[in-house]
Length: 254
Image (cartoon, rainbow, N blue to C red; front, side):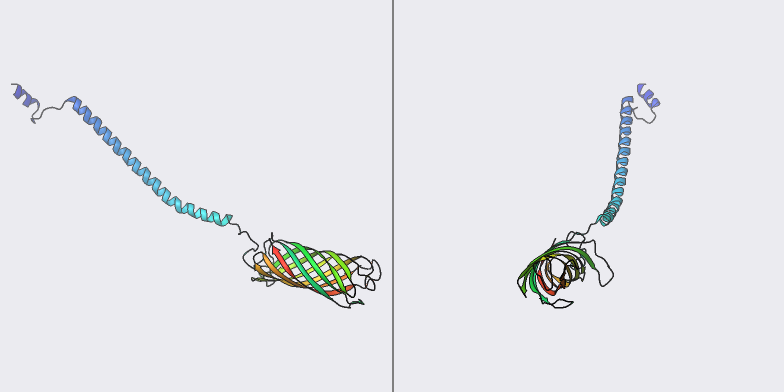
């Protein structure tokens, strides 16, 4: 009877599952489904982050490159673009030169005055290179010169002077940098009559020359200059002293 009742209650012939087992099975299935959903979300998030990083890296590199271009500064040094291509506006110089003059009895001067000079000068560039697209591309330079020496013909006399100069340096793109130079200053000298009268005199100078660079910061300097001394009529006689000097020395750039 018991067996027949059991068959009637469960026609398939299988035993009914306990309620506790069904509850465990449902809980396990819920956990598995939740883990699968969590795993899928993690995968999707990781994939999204990876794609975003991959696309962001080239963009970041591009922005970094653009930033480098915008923030790029010229390399430190003497030249704006390279040897002989024009000085930077911050360039300064110190020059030591020595030379001698050949006097001329011209413009009213009665005697030929020959003397030897030693010159010390400091200079600073007046801004960046100008005339970029022209053959006379170059830099203006302001110089201050202290010079002194001795006359050895026709007599023995001393001379000392202080002169500001304006110089123009041609940017040739080579180690040879020619220049022209103009200056006007004050002089004290013991040279007297018949050409000069007072200790105080003015000096006028005009020069052409060249710097030959031995390195980026050192150059041989050569120039030929006209020198005129007179007192502008303050006293008499005022015939003046005239001569052409040949000078050579070293210029230090910094």
